[in-house]
Length: 78
Image: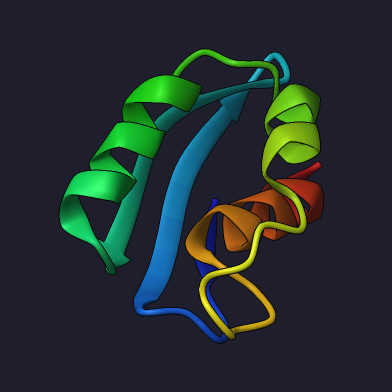
């Protein structure tokens, strides 16, 4: 899955969804260290669990964030 983000510093998210689990998550752009941490933490996690943990997170005064955009991307993939 490749998802073009909206309203964040990152421009794109890509990941594989296998048997309802997240694999090979990568962000293009954004806060490199933080996003690498998210990628490592969600590897192999159940997609619905990732959505429940990350959906609605905001970045500063923005109405969304990279984690929130990931939740939106996963919802779209499901």
